[in-house]
Amino acid sequence: MQDHNQIEAFVVRNTDYYTARWQLSGGGTKMSFNWAAAIGQVIWFAYRKLYAPMLIGIAVYILYVAGWMYIDDRALFSPGLMTILEYSGAVALTVAFGFLGNSIYRRRYLKVKEQAQLRHGDLDEQLNYLRSKGGTSIAAFWILVVLFMLPFLWAGYWGIYVAGQLEDAGYNFDATGPLTVEEFEANFLMHLDEPLEGKHRDCVLREIKARAADAGDPETLDPSTVDFLPEDSWPDLDPEGRRIILMQVITTKAMFECPHFD
Figure 1 (tube, rainbow, N blue to C red):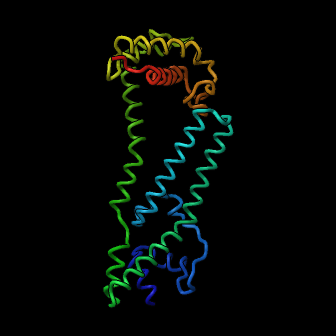
Figure 2 (figure 1 turned 135 degrees about the horizontal axis):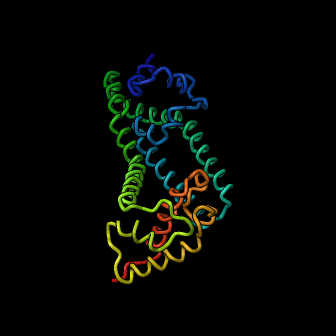
């Protein structure tokens, strides 16, 4: 009963679930899968105030994404194999979080319980200490949700903004054949936040012209030959969608290729 009261004070929510999974009366814990930890992952850690594991999980994600960017940039695997490996990696992370969640949470409980017993001799004071260190944090949950959503919100805003600018410029959606420098200048470059000038402009236009010529007609383009094109959805895009996306990709590459000349 004492163990149950202590777990209840620390966990607050779903006490019976964690009592059953941790099996503290037996001195150990069986391997179990926590669906909330698998789906929420680092967000679940934040919600359960497991801040150290949360930071480790974020670091793992950063290394995971950086590793795949490195591999993709150097085309170390074929596009098909890359897709399989990326999905496999995502599934592996999900399974790992699911199986580690209960064990990590139990270790945190035992550590806090030990601290409570060392600091306080009275059981009620121990329970109060467990409540102060345990429970859940809605604030941490939403902070992490917002932080994870920011890149997607920014990408969505930028995509809508660029699409609106192109529409206002009277973009010729009926154009055919390879993209032309005139299309880039009239319908995209003129709407950049920072105008292109001098040698920087010359370099960007030169890169755009060369890359557009290499890419050829967006309608017949093999998306695997141009980095950052959406290979899976490319066949489903209409002609105007292909021209817009290819224009954005080529411009971005040209901007990175050309430094600012002072």
